[in-house]
Length: 267
Ligand SMILES: NC(=O)C1=CN([C@@H]2O[C@H](COP(=O)(O)OP(=O)(O)OC[C@H]3O[C@@H](n4cnc5c(N)ncnc54)[C@H](OP(=O)(O)O)[C@@H]3O)[C@@H](O)[C@H]2O)C=CC1
Ligand SMILES: O=C(O)[C@@H]1CCC=N1
Image (cartoon, rainbow, N blue to C red; front, top):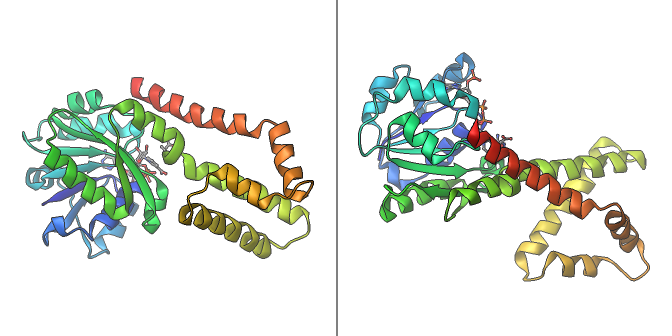
């Protein structure tokens, strides 16, 4: 299988690096095209990829094309390639909010996979939701799933509403976790800990809590109860969060991202 990546920034390159481990490539290199000179220089030095200046040649040979430019660059890509697209070529978009109808029309292509990736793919712990246009067969969807799985896990969702929704949960979600980490590190520094110790206290707390959650079949609520003693310190913290409506604010934040993904689809 021959893959082409258009846009090799944070996300595109991360997914390409994961896919290098896929047996589906069958020895074929992943070809990469990017407008940025910096990215070009980086890829030219990286013997795992082939940099393609000329999109015409690169596209003509590709079975699957991954699109990982920012949503506001989609029109440039459409213009550059829509006359070169061959029937049967499949396009996998990593762009937030750009819907299948827009992709299909802009690319002049029928086989479209729309995904919502997330950044922990950089360490093989990503979660990618995806959905496919009606012209993508079950087998093709399986192939794409196996490519996406090289970066962590992937979840096929039944329609695009769930792609926008997962943008609000897992796509943007790592940033919410970092927000929480930053706030806890700030509290640790205010209590007098050094930057280094604050980082250890917070990161190990996150890592340990996630590990507990994953290794046992208990709800977050049950875990909270295991940490909190009656009348103790944790209850004081959890009560403060509930009194300040943190739960609702996080819910609203996730919906703000979901709504923005829907809005991006209309731009
Ligand atoms: N970062 C994240 O956590 C997530 C990102 N996404 C989605 O992933 C996509 C990529 O995001 P990200 O990797 O962060 O973006 P980056 O800006 O890091 O990467 C995009 C790359 O594409 C290049 N580019 C722009 N226009 C073209 C073009 N016409 N042809 C070829 N290359 C081009 C850019 O060059 P230049 O810099 O010169 O413009 C840049 O190198 C976005 O659509 C985003 O919605 C989805 C989920 C999470
Ligand atoms: O912020 C964004 O638009 C992208 C999509 C999800 C995460 N980053």
